[in-house]
Length: 376
Image (cartoon, rainbow, N blue to C red):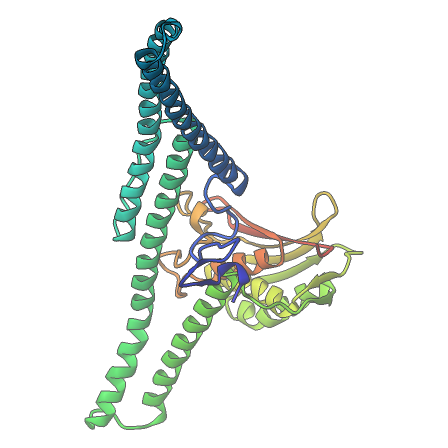
């Protein structure tokens, strides 16, 4: 388990980061540096209030001593009375200022505490009005951003469970129906009726493997085995694996590798999985007579190698394009579970790379990802 995520029942370890928080975003939402600023300003304001309170108490004691001395002492102490009354008026205004300062700080913090209780009970709609001093406004803003993230992750969690249940329901229905039919004597236990059960079991196994790979990669716990790899070899292996499928679909499968590419320090199996996922989508969605091209060339700047898979298929709808790397996002006619591109993104990011998609409806799709030539 990642050390940043460990916690005990006695409180979080230093540097704690919740497992649900995205790897590419800082926690807390406003950034660790700004959070320290919030704490520093808040403590400074509390120290100021405490200092004012102690000053009021000290001055009140001095006032009491002066008044008592004027009452029971000699005439020379009567000259202190005007100053005592002035000091009393000043203390009154100071007391009012202290009370207002305390209320100005305590009320916004109380709002956050009340909203935190609501979030703890499962109400992710709780929000805090950003009011009061600057540091409490920033605290409220950070709390609202965190709650918004919690709400989004809860929605994603529910959608994920619903999607997994949907994807598993079909193969389970086939397996259950065929098994019950054979047990009831409706179907014979022959190859024709046993093979569908095996195929559906493989579909379920692939889905579970994909979910495990995706969750492990997104959690930052994916173990890579980097080694020097020739980019040309990665392209050649990927094209060779899909040559038969492309020929059967009537597609022209091409490979284009720029000469002199540097070796990459990557996990060849995982990068091959990325290319396989991209090629699988391209071959599946490109109509007969089209073409698919796999390329590798130096990325702009020379610090990375760019891989691309381009097809001449129908393209991706503009409203879907920004979400193609999300879980379970797929075309209506797709036979997959919608995890291939999400896995590809996670594996590329695990290698400190980037991935993107370009497409125009009716003009094909190009998937690109870059891998750095030098490890950090």
